[in-house]
Image (tube, rainbow over all chains, first blue to last red; front, side, top):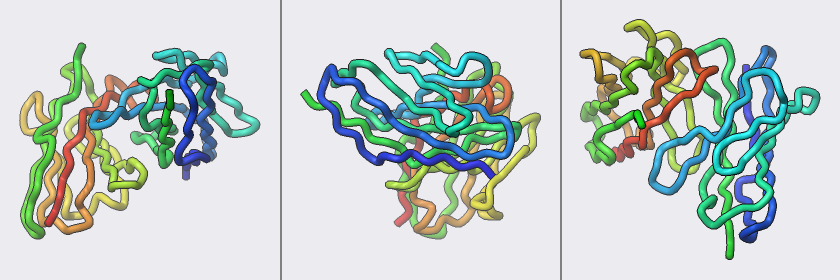
Length: 112
Length: 114
């Protein structure tokens, strides 16, 4: 069975500071990894995905993530956050089946 | 830009009543999904649908739930007799291929059972 652990429920950070949102997964098969963002009162939007190839994945809005197979991690990073990045971020894992398994989410609060 | 559309955005229903949540997936997508998120909890997979049949369902998706694609555009989730614990945000999603391609999510329907 697959599972995803997001280690931080909330991450407060000042504007223009770097941020890392942590995600660890477990799976017995090859995985596909995703980060989704949910702004207040909106649906889930894909930030980036790892399917294969380069372990450093770049997404929208300046975010990137690195797939680390040995540490079973897929941490999300941004070198300089903006107020508009305040949202909830979800890490998810997919496989050969037909579903995504989500983590509990991390609320990123950017303060001025 | 194509998007997944869900209606209604918010529905309040009495316990024991039937509800139908509606979704219009992106037109060239072949895979359709329902997920739910109980307040303060994880987004959980309910069911996936492909080629006019359920391809996978979770243990949450019991006999109270059903899905249907009644025409070429709509994808519905029916809860036959709602319970208080069915109160949640329900997300519809669709993808062109399987879940290892990008799944596009709708805005969600907030279901409140009273």
